[in-house]
Length: 222
Image (cartoon, rainbow, N blue to C red):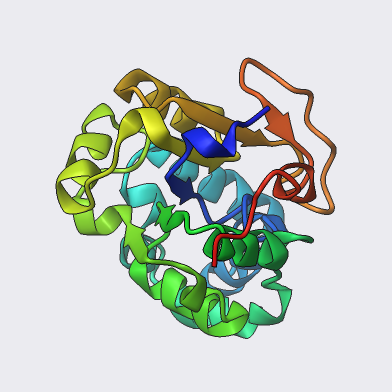
């Protein structure tokens, strides 16, 4: 699936790729609607209908991932709510071993996430994964989400990499499409981003269930 001798840089998504997407799904689909319903004095059904329509209108935009946007939009402190359920933040199996092997093999490791800086800080504090990366980049720093074609050129300007010798791993097909269009050679999709959700079927990109499937090919150089 991968020729590690042809890969120098590894770009990794966070939510659904390194971290269990169960936290985010539960937060946005269950916890926020509950809090929104209580704040507005409406039923949970009414709150969900309202919220899901708002979500849909922002899908694929930077606002969708922005904690501050939703705090203003909904009149509730989203960052604080995330802290209330941060016990659900979890690292996928085999991720730490994979990151450790990447370090040992001398690969450049970059976390590239659409998550807002406040969410990113909370998750890095909770998981202690920050030390595994050479660089941690939020799309909010670049002003565009990963789905946007110009995101990648902005990333290239900030952190230069050889597109032909770069691996990018994500759980979003639309984001992988954007990376492919930019010219990133090696692409991998995650088949089970949410541990409580169904297993996805492999689509147009090479796909893995977890990182143990590709760790074996790495060779330690230090």
